Amino acid sequence: MITVKSLKRWRTLRAGGRFGGRSLGFVPTMGALHDGHLSLIARARRENDIVAASVFVNPAQFNDKKDLARYPRTLAADTKMLAAAGADFLLAPNAGDMYPDGYRYRVDEKEESRLLCGAYRPGHFEGVLTVVLKLLNLVKPDRAYFGEKDYQQYRLIKGMAEALFLDVEIVPCPIVREPDGLAMSSRNLLLNEEERAIAPALNMVLGSKASIPNMKKALAKLGFGPEYIEERWGRRLAAAKLGKVRLIDNVEA
Ligand code: AMP
Image 1 (cartoon, rainbow, N blue to C red):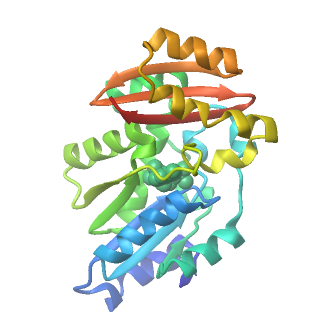
Image 2 (cartoon, protein in one colour):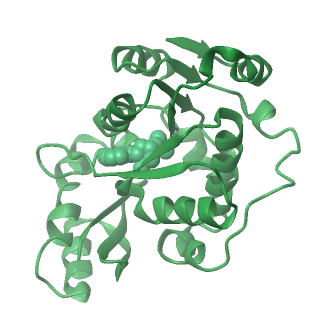
């Protein structure tokens, strides 16, 4: 696997002949990789000649500075995991290179980005859509892979690709869970022992037959700070805080 940190080098490499006629699958991530991410790499590996991943903790999508500072960064371990999973390229740019305009130019969406997570994290999806558009323009993949764990994000990215006529197939991938049902997430690393023991209840409650108000009550009783539980797009989606850590999940409605 070739790791590329400089965007200048990446663009030279991408413009060269080595990709000619071969399909390219792309998996953008913020690192602190786990089996959820690796399932996207495995799918990309099966469906493409070349696989590129990126690790970039995108400051523009963090509405909370403390959340950005706390976000786990494990690039050395991520590099090993990606190489072992069969990625050919790792793009790991820095924020200065990614935002030469200082984030003056942004992708804005005025409906679905304001719902659910968007209502609690103002500007979050603007940051996500902007960085994904930049990455898609840099990598120019045939297919890009996104987890259904971030279901609202997947929908918005698919919508952006259609609205802006991007020449890429946006591929949704199922949620990978821990054996106890907790959706894998880089943020799970931030849970203390007690919080980690309670965390699987989010998935259990979400998948139960209780009414939504009763689900919220049950979560609050367990020590969660529920933000929303809502049914949309054939899914039941939720976000809840456990201590300082914000967890999201969704199940089929
Ligand atoms: P992140 O590093 O959290 O930005 O995630 C990078 C990609 O991996 C996104 O498309 C996520 O939806 C996906 N992803 C994260 N966790 C999981 C999971 N547990 N199962 C499937 N995909 C996931």
